[in-house]
Length: 211
Image 1 (cartoon, one colour):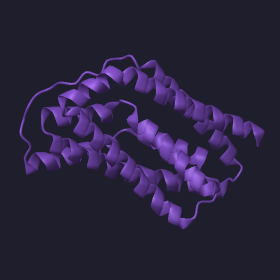
Image 2 (cartoon, rainbow, N blue to C red):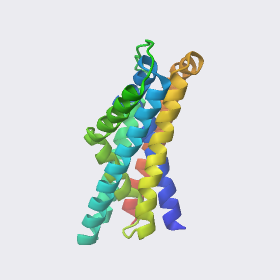
Image 3 (cartoon, rainbow, N blue to C red):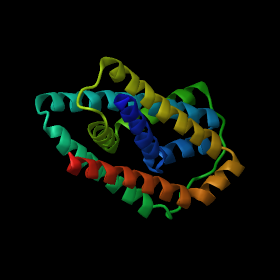
Image 4 (spheres, rainbow, N blue to C red):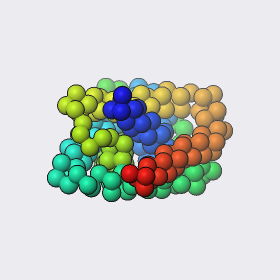
């Protein structure tokens, strides 16, 4: 039960992080608008594959540290909570910043789709913030001992979160009406995500002080 709750908490935190507009969000949105919806989905799959890479690296690194220094779990948990609190503040602060998307039209091709996949993958793996977020979330929310099946399930879950969310972005923002609705609601959506992530960070810090 504790492990299930931890995995669900990881999923919630990483989903909120993915939903926060940033370079990856803008890249997928602009690919959908400037090239094609198909290219946007290909970029989303690339984002998912990049997420798997970072999740495996972060998992192995965090578990190795915890195995070597068990007491470090509390320190990492507090640090991860502080980082989530910081991310929540950043999301809230930037909620009213406009999201600039250039709208052009172009037909996709197999070559472009492959290039869009590579673009999504390289955008994900070239962003060191992603690795920091994964490591912070894992250190904060996972127990000190993680069974082997969870080591397989977590990267698969992260692939699903990244790919599904950015596919939704590609599908929605490539159509005029959903794009207009999202841009009109962006400030409230970002504030909600920032508030939830900040609350999660505060809870982790509070739990560490109670331990």
